[in-house]
Image (cartoon, rainbow, N blue to C red):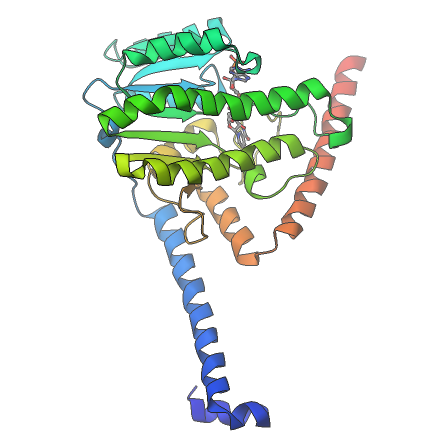
Length: 341
Ligand SMILES: NC(=O)c1ccc[n+]([C@@H]2O[C@H](COP(=O)([O-])OP(=O)(O)OC[C@H]3O[C@@H](n4cnc5c(N)ncnc54)[C@H](OP(=O)(O)O)[C@@H]3O)[C@@H](O)[C@H]2O)c1
């Protein structure tokens, strides 16, 4: 539509002032162009483009990947897939039996070509001796990748006022202090070697304030801000850090206890594959002013895109509130049924 045509459409006062007309036209064109650009970035990064090659972070030079919370769920899958990519793996968590089994699986999957060691650590204890042990283990290793995955969720979604103090403390200590301490132990070596990748496993609950799991939501928001701040500090040392914006991942995970399959739920294997093939990209978080956030799994990426296009986080906060209230009821019901049997 030409501007002459627009003149005939608009109210008299606006049409009389061509600058107003040009302003409306340019603001409209800019908004549409921005929307189209964002849409094409999200689609291209999620469905077409490949991220950085993992070799950039150490393989095949015998580098190590440190994975916290590697005894099950997403962490175990990171360990298996990074081992398949040629990294030696340091598996960190509390459960020795489960960690030993993951180490054995890595050994048999890679015909012994990859070394897997275990480090027992309880992040909830915030124990300085355990941290010193971790520091001494990693001081002799060329750590190329750190995956800060260990995380604690609420036992049951609950209002903050009703959440047990110990649970609040454990969630904060594991999710925040665990990540900070492990990163602090490993980062100096990466800076010396001038290369490295740090992946902080986050959650949509860190991006959209989530009632009923407010402590968890707050810890993930902390990780999101921490990641962006750290990214700018360590970029000159050729080290990359990304916040992994994650929606549901289940099947073998103990954390969510969700049973029903849904398009928004990824299996740990598919989720981790999507992360490792999109390093350095943003996918669903593209052009949303979150340059160090990666929403890699396709359905999570589309959901992230919708949240930012709608632009009203409060709407999604209410939606999460309702969903988590229903989830709480379902969990309580299934626990009651289990007790009666
Ligand atoms: N699953 C989802 O839908 C989902 C969605 C968004 C974000 N996330 C995030 O993804 C990460 C992994 O979740 P997941 O679903 O795979 O959970 P998961 O199956 O319950 O595994 C959690 C891991 O963290 C470790 N861990 C928990 N408390 C620990 C502690 N005190 N000290 C050391 N390690 C501890 C556990 O190992 P041990 O028990 O052996 O110590 C386990 O290996 C978490 O950060 C979570 O917030 C998950």
